[in-house]
Image 1: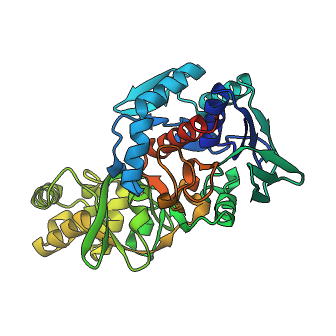
Image 2 (image 1 turned 120 degrees about the vertical axis):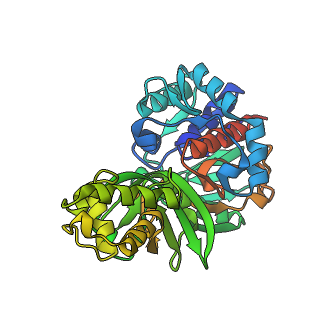
Image 3 (image 1 turned 135 degrees about the vertical axis):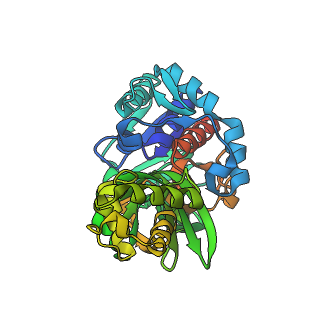
Length: 396
């Protein structure tokens, strides 16, 4: 049984190992000069492999499809798979990392396991065309290769420097599949210029909520990064899927306090400050650059003596601290995105086998499918799971 896998990333390598273990003759075709480039940059180079809190609510797209996949190959199966490849993991509050906390560990073990099971990894082999034959497929890489089973595991369009260029969508579409429009996911937001830009470089705990027509679409809490173009950081990534032009992001810079507690705290700080400048006083509560930006946003001079700040100004400052609004212009685009939202329609894929419901013996795995998750190991878990399921159903 000859299996060709297009794409040597997370899903492709796991699919190759799984199929080869079953006895298939497996070839991975990778367009880049080496496989697994995106694995190496995941989790800031630490590679958050999976998460113990797996459920459909952590994903966008067809959640029933996701639940079916996770039921077959969840975090325990992922941990077992990597242990068999030689990777010991550590649990950090449910976030599972390699014990070494190095993404290169994960890549090296996957590559070595694939080679050990006889998988042929052919780099610098971009696929330009696939064609369904009476039996199997012809795959064009400059020469035509034939296989009995074909897995498309090319990834999406996020982080194109790693090789993700949308090829998989074109190949799937050539086979008659419907492609949900690909968009950048888990990325920073470009916002209209505002006072907050003067705090560029600041990282601070915050709750961010994306709002459209006065309705909160999603909120998340974590480390916010203020940038010269807008906002970034994990909580922003997690809401970015729903942020688009004409939406707003509301920022709460002190999420651990309610509005009244925040107002009381600011009042007490200012009352104790006397002749000291307002910016210096607020620095006891917030990063200095952020304090100055927030003061400016409500037209309070940073050098204004604390004792001169009026109750009306305190109320305005409290509102800015708890409900700062930024207007979204766009996401940062695929170049800075961690995942792709959109892809091959899940209504056309069997979640039990990852086989196409339109084309016999064609399978899909990973980011090329219209499923994406929030930060925390969820997207890699989906890649491992769909790779294992696809590879495990390509051997007979």
